[in-house]
Length: 205
Image (tube, rainbow, N blue to C red; front, side):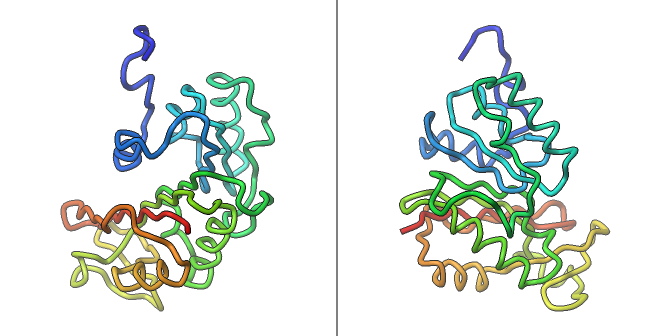
């Protein structure tokens, strides 16, 4: 680590559970990493600084503009076209293009289960065999009595938001259908009875 940088400058606002994957040595410099739904790049600061080959997509052109600016500052060798204005469920990358695909606080914005599955299948398509899929998403786990169903898997949450919520059975079923292997048990954090965020971490066979 460069001594002139503090932890905030080095890691940015990285998801703590993604940071955990770094600590466990699963993401290493040189890997091709896609952040699917990257926003303004909050999870990419360390990766850009540390020699990863970083890519991102987001539906927001403003978000991609910010991510491109971040990449230009921290990893100016990376092509700007690595960062694209695209929906997660319809990306222009080739099959098996990435060592790692990240999905941090994105999947629960799907309008319905069909869109959710389309997003997951597309991220799985661009992940190479042996690659890692890391997702953080809202769930009903531990809050089953505190969320109110709207339709299908869409719910009103106590924090006032509406989200598509998964549960353990769904994650187990989808993992089996994909042929994925858990590299972490399903972990859920309940945030003061307002929402539950679950970590879903797989390896592709």
